[in-house]
Amino acid sequence: MNNILNLNSFDNDFWTAIDKLVSDNKIIIDRPNGTAHPKYCNIIYNVDYGYLQNTKSMDNGGIDIYVGSQKEKNANAIICTVDLLKGDSEIKILLGCTDMEKQSIYQTINCNANMKGILINRE
Image 1 (cartoon, rainbow, N blue to C red):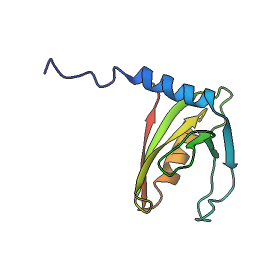
Image 2: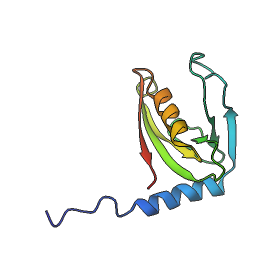
Image 3: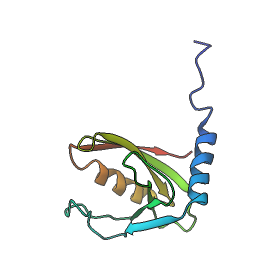
Image 4: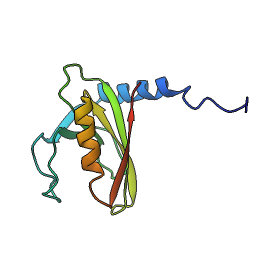
């Protein structure tokens, strides 16, 4: 048991890399708070949603990002998703999201059987 790798020893490096992605790339909000998903009109975004320009995700679009209402815009969580319809997985960065906004995003992502996600908070 003494030889088990400390799996959390690289957490700071991970979050530093996320911070660099966010600071080095423009945030494009293409689905503002209160708008409906373009394909699934019953899904309403409760937090500004968009992507990081000049980045690439599994779907060949930019890395997804939610921008919450906190004054300080720090990456404070990510959601890792699995989309059974698209057959892919990706991360979504949560920037300046309150706990209530995180909960809302999490519930929206997990509202149907074809997409599931887990939320990882920054400590």
